[in-house]
Amino acid sequence: MNITACIVTAILLFPPARGEAQTPAPPATYSITISPQEAEAAAFAWSKDATRADDKSDAGYALYKKGYALVLEEQYEAARKKFEELLAKFPSSSYADDARYWTAYSLRNSDREKAIEDYKRFIREHPKSSYYDDAVADLNALQMDMPAPVHGALSYAPAPRPARAPTAVPIPPNTRMMVRQLRREMQHMSRVGVVHPFATPFPGWHEEEKLDDATRLKMDALYALGEAKEDDNSFSTLRDVALDTRQVRPLREAAMDALSGFTKHDVVSVFVEIARKDTSADIQGFAIDYIGDHGTDKNQRVTVLDDLFRSLPKSRGEQRKSIVYTIADVGNDRAVDFLKKVALADEDYDLRRDAVYYLGSIGGESARSALYEILKSH
Image 1 (tube, rainbow, N blue to C red):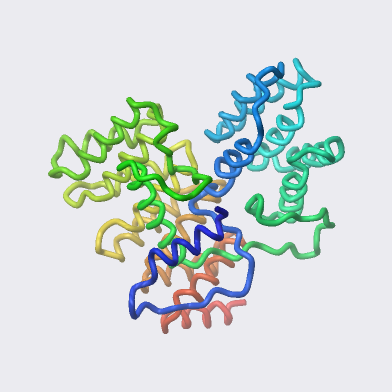
Image 2 (cartoon, rainbow, N blue to C red; image 1 turned 45 degrees about the vertical axis):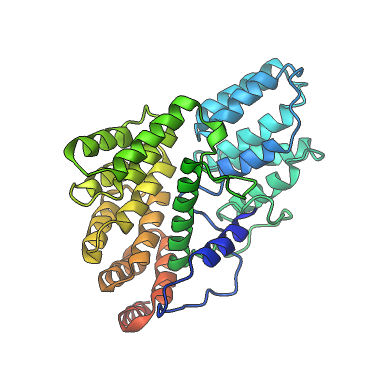
């Protein structure tokens, strides 16, 4: 199931509350991400690799699999080293084109110019590769400074860079809320052993058969702590697992999810620490989502997220975007004030455009007043 279908499923499963304002989305093609980078490396990588029959007799097979596993873990630099080793030792391997594609893919966020160069080389040298269309789409997106399209949804022909590059339409805030709800339902179904109907799992949804028995048992224990009586020991245990970058990702996600239900302890500070310091963009995105959902005081949620936004360096673009649309999910007057400030003064022009779009999605008198103020200032 592709991302768009997942969104439709989310809307059917979790319709907006009765009486909630409905703002129709503009007629455009969405570049959907469920959380920072979620619809990219792991979802596409998993499905793409799953369609290929393994050739274990190929000399480059073992190195390719090691590099590919690192791509799934978003350890791109380490993955590139494995692929470079494969190409140096086994240049005639049937996995050579795969290695060159994933090498270019893994450079997109760290060295855009080198990624463009590698994609062009791949397209020139491997016109018959099964990755050819994906490489063309990735290259076109990079050349236009756009987020890469959801793979398998559309193919793009190479095109010259336009005078003004278009940008993807932001995801409506209420849609993100429904996607988060669906993700949590999927996590719960996986934990209790219900097989979900999707052929391709999204990152963060760990199928039971892919986890060893010891990890599954630990996940069950973490969730059980979250559902039992809230006390200092359970809080400290869950906090320690959530913060420990040496733990495998499924355990950290389970600990964060279990903590999100705590009301007597300061779980928000745990999520803030993860959002500020963690090395995984996906884990950071989950933490930001949990901050936006936690507690009944909407003003406090926006204040915490605003402080986090201002504390992050400008280089943390994905996390800053995540904070902006999480605050837009809150949608109260303080959220409107935050979005207005971003729209008027942030250095990231695309983020300013997102803020304007979210103001239009929120609607109401305060949001309209903010838009009028923005109009007068430019």
